[in-house]
Length: 69
Image 1 (cartoon, rainbow, N blue to C red):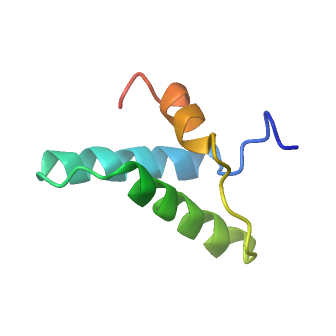
Image 2: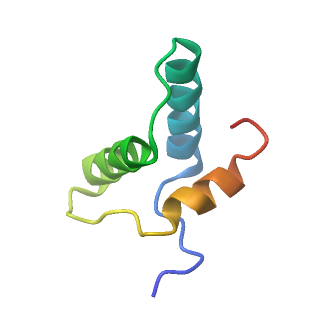
């Protein structure tokens, strides 16, 4: 049970939030599953494992970045 465990670093989440904003500003908003895929790619590139974000990660991510997203 990983409640409260943030898998991506603050810097990684900030980078992902900027990617989401940039994509949307160019007319290509990212879907829920695409954002999770990016998060998983970031996590796996750093951790080198098959770890993935959980089912509620997306909504927690939006809550953490509600001020810009």
